Amino acid sequence: MPGVVIVGAQWGDEGKGKVVDIYTEHADMVVRFAGGPNAGHTLVVGADKLVVRLVPSGILRPQSTCVLGQGMVVDPATLAAELAELSRRGLLEGRELWLSDRAHLILPYHVAIDTLRERGAGAIGTTKRGVGPAYEDKAARLGIHAGALRDPARLEAAITRALARWAPVARDLGGELPSLADVMAAVAPVREALAARLTDAASLVDGALRAGKKVLFEGAQGTLLDVDHGTYPFVTSSSAIAGGACTGAGVGPTRIGCVVGLTKAYTTRVGGGPFPTELHDDVGEAIRKAGSEFGSVTGRPRRTGWLDLPALRYATVVNGFDGLALTKLDVLTGQPEVRACVAYEVDGRETRDFPLADLDRARPIYRTFPGWSEDLRGARRLEDLPARARAFVDFVSAESGCPLFVVSVGYERDDTIVLRSPFG
Ligand code: IMP
Image (cartoon, rainbow, N blue to C red; front, side, top):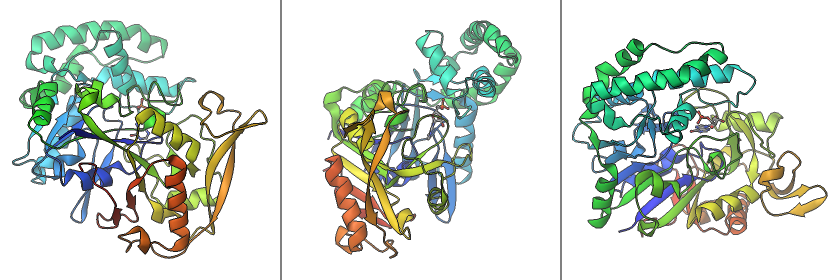
C-alpha cells in the first residue's frame, strides 16, 4: 500500500486537522515531515478542543503510529508539554509516538533570534517559534540533531558552538541570547523522556510501507509558504509541498501513491506578504468571523480574501494533486454573492497563471456567483448541496483540473461530504 500525502494548497490553515482526522481513521501511521511548532492543528476531543503544534493529528487514533520526521524542527520543551497534556487527558496510553533522531532541535536562542528579528524593519510576521533560525543552522551545518538528546556532553558542546555563532547576530539586533546554563536548564527536565522516543524514522516508515501499512504524510503550512515555491521571502523555511514528504520523511517518490491538496472555499493568510485577492471590507470581516480565522498558534487575526484559482492551479502543478479537499464551504453561506479569482491582469496582459514574480502588480479578475443562504451542514452527498453552492463547488473542481475527494460543510467531523478515499 503506497503512502498518501496531504498538503495545503494555500498559505496554510486550510483545515488540515479535520481532513487528516477523517483520513487517519484508516491510517496505520501518520508522519509529519516539515515545519515545527509554527503549525497548529486543532484536535476535537469530545466536547473539548486541543491545539497541537508538533504531534501529528493522528494521535487521536489509537491504531496510528505517529512519527515526527527528520525534515522537522522540534522544540523539546514544546514537544514535552504537548505529550504531558495528551497524557493528562489519557490520550497517550497505548499510542506509539516516535521522533526522528535526525530532526533538528529548536532551542531557546533560536526563539530569541526569531523574536528579535521580528521587532526590526526586516520583520515578515513569523510565528516567533524559532523555526527560521533553526533551519538556518541546519543549512549552515551547525544544527543539532534530536539524537544529541541521548548525550548531554555532546549536546552541551554543540550548544556552546551555536551560542558563539549567534551572539554577534543578537548583539546587532540589540538583544541578548540566553546563557548556556539557561539553554541546558530548558532541556534537562525533558531530555530523557524525549530520548526514549528517538528512532531512525526513515527506516520505521519504510518498514511500514513495505509491510503494506497505510501511511499518511501530514503536511504543515501550505504551498504558498514553501521556501522554494512560495511567495518568497514571505515564506516559512521548510519544504511544505508534497515533495517535502520524500525528503522530510526519507521515502522515495515511488512510494507515494496519492497526493491530496487542501483548499478553503476562500483564502486566508497570516503574517506579511502579497495576497492579491485580500478583502479589506465588511465581507472580509464577515468571513473572518464566520470562519473563526484567528491563528491557532499566535491568535493573530488572519487576513481573508476570495478563492484564488490561478494559485490553486499553480499548487496543483507543484504538488501533482490527485484530488482536492475543499474545506469551509459553509463559511460562505449568507454572502449575497461569492467570488473566485479566475485570472490575473499584469501590465495590461491577461494570464490564467499565478504570477508569482509579479504579484505586486497583478490585478485579480473575478467571476461572481450568486450566494446561497441554506445551512449546508446536513449535506452528505454533492446532490444535497443547494444548487448555487453546488455550482460554485463544481466550478472550483473544473477550474483546478482536480477531482474532489472531500467537501467540508461544517465544523463537526460528520459535516463532511466524503467522495473518495485516497487509500483506494
Ligand atoms: P515561520 O514559519 O514562523 O518562520 O513564519 C514564516 C511565515 O509563515 C509567516 O508569515 C507565518 O505567519 C507563516 N506561517 C508559518 N506557519 C504557519 C501555519 O501553520 N499557518 C499559517 N501560516 C504560517
